[in-house]
Amino acid sequence: MSIVFSEDHGRVRHVVLNRPEKRNAMSQELLLALGGELRDAAADGGVHCVVLRGEGPDFSAGVDLGELAESSGQPELLRPFRNVFLECANLCESMAKPVVCQIHRTCVGGALEVALGCDLRVASSDARLGLPEVRFGIIPDVGGSTRLPAVVGLGRAKELIMTARLIDAVEAERIGLVNRVVAPEALERATQDLVDELLANSHVAVGRAKRVIDASARPALAQTLEMEVAVQEYCVAAARETARQASEAQEPVAS
Image 1 (cartoon, rainbow, N blue to C red):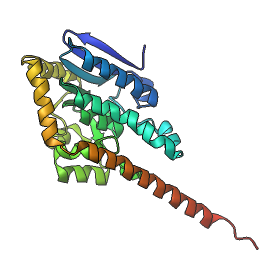
Image 2 (tube, rainbow, N blue to C red):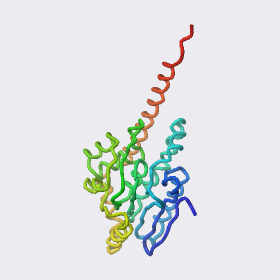
Image 3 (spheres, one colour):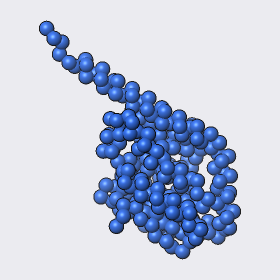
Image 4 (cartoon, one colour):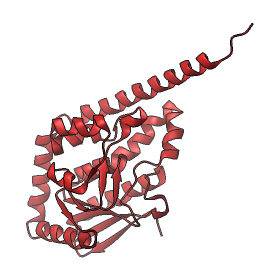
């Protein structure tokens, strides 16, 4: 089966991350497939709502760290890698139909940044969420630094990003990061209940209301998304320079 696949349930399309052996870590292959499925869902007039979820024990552990390490060592690969990632979040946000993210267990780093591109988030009570990038000398650069403040407010966004703290689902609901929290065994039912509420309304009006709300909440989205990657390039360059200086300091002095 594909690394990302889709299932239609009437007017609802489930887009499913299917790399459970890697905790649905987001590799280039997975992201390209996800982008394709999201574009198809956006273009299909018979689809009135999209659910994004993951197979296996976790929604997603975030970026594939092996591929990220390869990109960070080659600055010219950073933007292409990031652009593929960012497109998935942008597609969730830009399609004129609601996108619900169904989160279980792990949703950190790039996975949360994609989830922030969705309109609504339903989480199981055992979920852990966060943006820990600053621990590794980088920043959330695929929409996290831009979208999180619009969802939870500036102060809470700064706290989560600048401390790299992971939070549980209960706290995520309290601060508005997720919309609903239920027991793990009730997650599918809760997601369907929310979808049913959305489908009970005019799909045209719901989709257009989404576009207006997003435009009002993030009027400078394009500029801040570009700033994210510019800052990320600075952080990566600073880390390389620090490593170079450390290596030189350890070299033996010739006699």
